[in-house]
Amino acid sequence: MRAATRGVKASAIDAFAFNPSPSRGGRGQGEGSSHPLPRWERVAAKRRGEGTLASLAGLLIASSAIAQGNVPPSYGHDFVTVGAPGNRPALPSERFYNLNFSPVTEQIGAVNYTYRISRTETTIGQWLDFVRVAWPVYQNEVRGNILSGAFTGSGIGVLNWTTNPTFFLVREASVTQPTNMEWRAAAMYCNWLHNGRPTGPGAEWSVRSGAYDIRTFTRNPDLSFNDQLRHSEGARYWIPTLDEWTKAAHYDPNRYGPGQEGYWKYPTTSDAAPLIGPPGQGTTGGTAANGLPLPVGSYPDVQSPWGLLDASGGYSEWTETVMFSWQNQYGLVSDNSRIIRGSGAGGGVFSDRIDDFRAPGGANSSLTGFRIASLVPAPATLPVASSLLCLMTGRRRRSR
Image (cartoon, rainbow, N blue to C red):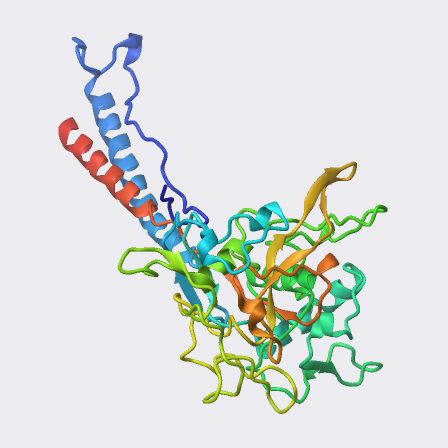
């Protein structure tokens, strides 16, 4: 079953009926009435109808603006749109191991809506402004170490900490190299984008909620985690789910021919493992002189069917999906074991296989990057409003 585009729905009109006021004494102007309204009430009713038509036209214009405004800004991320909503999950013959360790891995890749996902991983340059905004919240509310790579990543450092703790800077790295972080920091980055990516003094409010409520970033006495399992309804940016990541990296609507869908075993539009080596010699896994992964897009000809770059190589990437969750006396909890996908530079390409699932407990791996998922607005508002406008115009003509 195919589903509609996923997104924050623009304002729409659910129903409309033009019902002029009844006359004095209960006489109406409806069909079969032998007592028409007085002339002044007919004029008033006509004016009410014209006013309603004008209001509807205004709503149509507003709907157009809302529909256009619902496209979230890119904020420097290059997004691709992943369509084919309602695609099937990967078949056992399309998987490598075909082993299942959790219910969430039994069927992978099926997504019932259209969405966007960034073509490349988040870069050091994109991460830097966030770090400068988020550090007080990460330190004082999330209780994280702002000097660790789990927050800053490997390419950002601090200068003169004792005198100016807010002075984070890129440290012997390129702003176009991918960055790494723990899962909670990645979730806060999505909040920041959701709230408009503000910078400067006082902007730290923007990292607390929007996609993920950081008040849930707590742990119970039994060591289970309360971290929000899925992004909030209405989030404009989020960490991709396992299915979203798998579809964007492995699913091909024309895998077996035009209109014959399927999956590739590797995120390079191939069933053959990518070759580790520098650009021109290999197809993945190269490292720069500073020991970090190469700048994003260093292998421009190695893409997923949807155009993703570096799904192999760079850093392994976070997904939103937890491996295990359960109910206990604290509510719906988990071990916060967020599933990681893809290989990292210098590592083995076995991690690129479609069903190679890894999930560090507590989501505290700092050698993991991520790319952004984002909504695609629902397109139905304008046709609905246009139809209603035509309906109103017809009613107006009949009332003359």
